[in-house]
Length: 242
Image 1 (cartoon, one colour):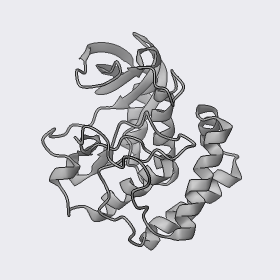
Image 2: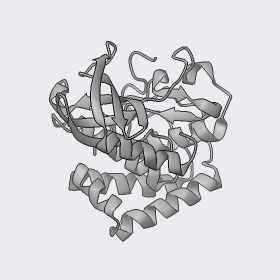
Image 3: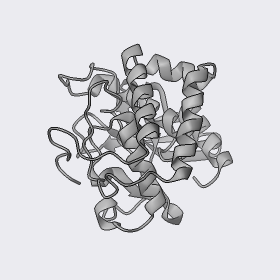
């Protein structure tokens, strides 16, 4: 998981590989499974979230959480940040759902244990969360992978058109967004407005038109203000924190 060729190979494996169930992930609020996917001579573990295993939520349409996992991956890739592990949608043993590459990591290490380290990576995650309106950025949803690379996972409750941002990452609240991130955001704005790439077409199919409009509006506000958001109304933190 360190270069583009490896990413492509992993996506191909997730899309075309044979799936073998390994077990239920016990800490998920929805049915989440650890699976092993094998394609040709490549084998990898993945997190499988079937749509029909999603717990009903009053504010998110049932069966769309797995779609939002893929949408978060597409957004991260369009920003050229590579924050979200390769994520695809396909049929699985328990029906249609998302498959996300399982990042090998130490579960004792997460955002709250690394504060002050990897500032640019953390700022990217904070920006991404504000952009996709992440309602559940727990500390344990930030993984430290090989080479001290940070990965952001669990994006099922994102992209709502109403303000939902709940996160443990507020250390940059009110601070200026680095120019490099603003430049990437402007490029992403051009990508959204161009609307003529296969990835854009897919994103617009994963989210409804109101959510797509809200995504563009949040992006424009972040660029215009040039600062990281501060906690908004309501509860700004997820629960549990980890």
